[in-house]
Image 1 (cartoon, rainbow, N blue to C red):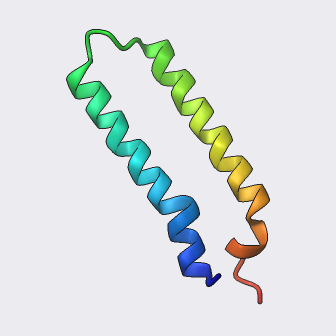
Image 2: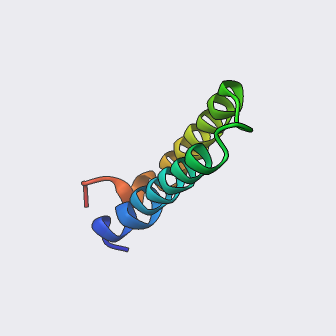
Length: 64
């Protein structure tokens, strides 16, 4: 897989989807969501992205 395609699939799209979900949750359900819940969701998302970066390191690297 090309590097640009891998970046799009493994990083850009998941980050955009998470950002969209975050905005929807904060704007629509702001009374229900607490700060600790947002921190936990950010931590889980960061861990998932870190795992993706580790697993897909070869596809995402600039070296060929």
